[in-house]
Length: 420
Image 1: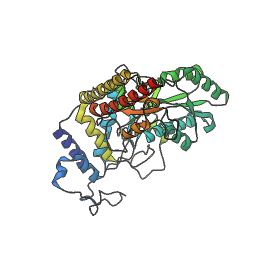
Image 2: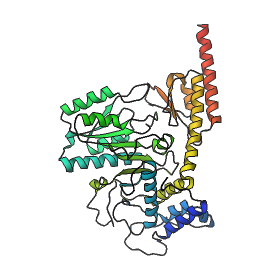
Image 3: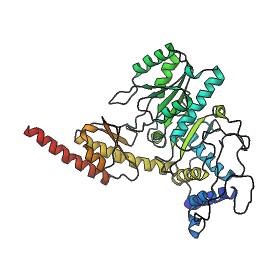
Image 4: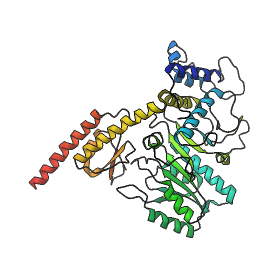
């Protein structure tokens, strides 16, 4: 790892204190032109000795605004401390996890995967408009039927059609022949410019798309395309567990990547990450934001500097090897759970590098699924799958209780079948 290190608790606190010293203190500095302040002391407890060992709370009280994209151009001088820590986060994720070259990436801490996915579509829509003078009707988004609903949101907001690609029911892999048939028809119908959302661990199954499948077919038909990887769930586990993964910036077809820090990384909600290659994010510059010192290149504008500090704290508390150990523990629990399901002849899907196990609903009575908080594929009837995720709070003791209840149900079912 080139940039991802592990710091002691004392080092973490010192770095954050230094960063906050470089952020405007609205208690002592009476800046007259900023529409922001620290947290309201008449409502919130903003003082106390407990803050000395609570750097994240201090960051929330300081209330830094990380507006802009700090890997590119100028940024608001008043909040440079938290912005520097955000830049370190983006560097670790882009270079050490997703194998970008130094200074050949851009990115920022988004509010979540939904925003980051829409940021990518926004960029690509504008590129096609500027470079090819493309109309909205000539553009199309391709994504598998397992893709997160944020792509449908982006399609609706940007007025660009989204076309869903079918997947194999059991393997959850994109059906290549169906993809090629769809691409041929879209081209015949006048589509010329393609945006692809390729999944690095779908929300329901943890399935991982091969982006090269899209690239090969779109290259075959000689159409311009951009590929965005939605690693909202898998981004903090799949590249770590699968060291042979080629889903990164070494793949020339991949232009941008989404990660969610408020999932596997356990950061506060409202914390995602958008990463892209250099030369792309400028296509969404809002020139009208002239009062902002720097370039406003993000969908949301103002962003929580405290959330960026939270991600920085987590990454540098673990370091690469600490994070690898945590992921390995979750994968061992996942493998144990899958072994139990195999012994019970229960059908399930699992990507071997992921901590999601999705069980066919016919093996899980609804009352047991509800008792253990399993997530169904759909809440609207006709559900085919239930999802179990091995997060830090899910231990083998919890899994074994679920397995024991399944055993009781299966034993009763087998007895009834025997009597019949």
